View 1 (cartoon, rainbow, N blue to C red):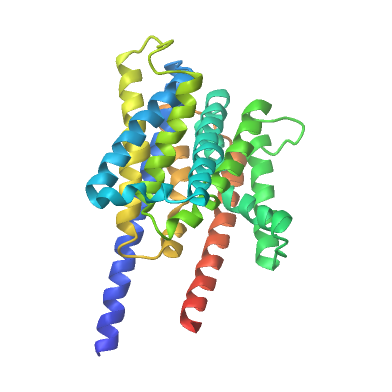
View 2 (cartoon, rainbow, N blue to C red):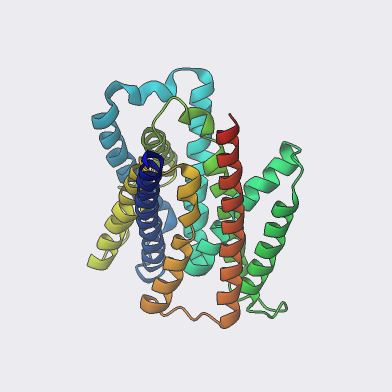
Length: 315
């Protein structure tokens, strides 16, 4: 009887965690749609926008982190290895990902850019194969084939002689997927001794320093409409602070493996909102292709979750 009660309580906690993670993914999906408005309709330059976004997001995240963890927020600079890790994360992970995703959305659309970025787990898989010499198993190969077919359908609408998005948007979308993989892999050594919130805060603020060296926030300020100001503020809050807070809260109830299963909410939300509010024209083949990509990544994440659970039971 006690076992059944404990199991029921555990299941409720997992569901709580998944619901909070779903909310986080939904926020990211909403921010992707707002980003298309900011980059295209409001005509805000990439350099200036990224300087503003990373500066204010970094400050907000570090203030929250300082309140929660006090002096521990400086542990990321405790030795040379940690410093190199946070610098690599800020430049090649977070900074490069924000830039490439923005350019992919600006030159194409949020829906396609989000799907291409969603391929990050596959790029991590390929990185493990080429650099760590990890042999892919049958599930890996199946996922790769399904995702590849999905991407081809998404960017060609089923006609391989013509792309549905500009080649430059496809290029930046692929770079976005690769850098999203770097965003996940590079900071892992820091996560054992530091809060993810602290790592993200410092990574964002350091990225801001580099963006501001290129384009200071006080130089070349574009003409901002009320909608543009609201859009930038929404991306800082809805696209950074709120989703990460929800994601961290979800970890209190469920494991990262369980939480990762709802990552698909982000591209789905972006697709729906892009069609509803930005009047993005999406064909049936694009929907089918995007669905295949989502299914492929879900299979991969679910497979990883089962392996993680199996390892925990055996240890």
